[in-house]
Length: 233
Figure 1 (spheres, rainbow, N blue to C red):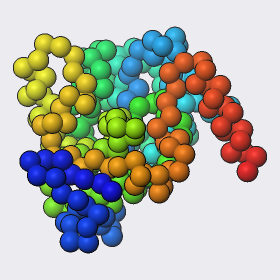
Figure 2: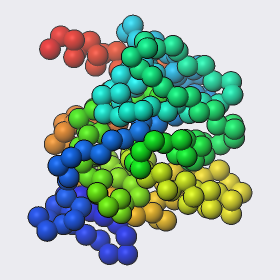
Figure 3: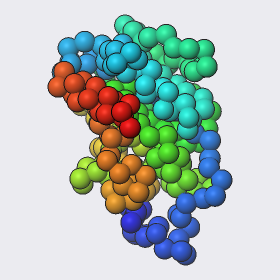
Figure 4: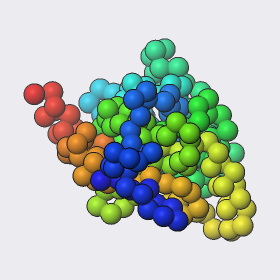
């Protein structure tokens, strides 16, 4: 079951709900955040090779099946690998270096060609295009929602979510009043958010590999084993 959190919670699983999945999928812009420091891994995640393909390539490959166009947010000193020409992308250089995903999202949203955008980091090699499309189907035709956010083990997965481009103004307003570097989770209370329950997500991604991210060398080894297991099927 999925619920919308606002002043009044509404069960979208109801047949009478205006937030039930739509028949015609809206077009999404894909936004990939690739300007982080990769401090825990100790080297650039974007260019990290995972069994013949860079992490960045694997993320783009999945997002391109569900999103068009694709924006890549980098910092001035970021390095991203070249990809085949079938993946046209636009690079957005975040002027505020190392200010976190919220600032990167704010930098990208004004360049979105569509009302809604799917956002992901560059270190999630097992994104499911089917899950992205499932979430896209939850975007209401009247654009009344600001965000569609999956919840795994009680935690909002804000870097695997869909956001309306109008929230850029909300991010700018909140950030200007706050001297600290804020995370995306901190602004959810200001938005009209559809939280997608884990049980609903499991219908499309039964093992939740979409939410596996690479933080360290152990994660890389886990990812390699998973890819090998998929190749044997």
